Image (cartoon, rainbow, N blue to C red; front, top):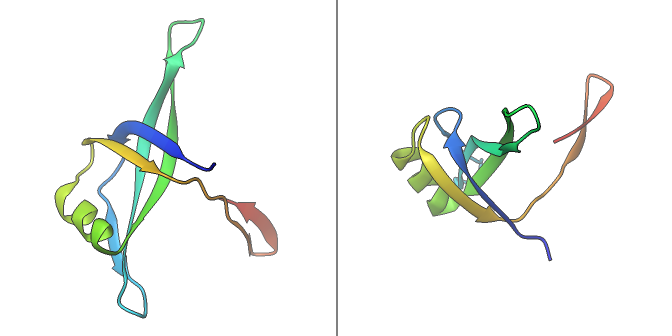
Length: 89
């Protein structure tokens, strides 16, 4: 089962774009706090998120930087090559 649930704040305003076929795609980053460490500090993970079609349009028109959001979906890791270097996101 591939299911993930995140609660955090938007690190920046969502970016809306459209594919060549006219499908809406919204990209944004959610800052999710980690539990307190032994030193009493909280770390933060910045998770990139992509929303497609109508949900992508709704996200782009209603959410702004700093807004608390809950995201539920699936985790997907992509490999690609850029400038002769293999990368993973």
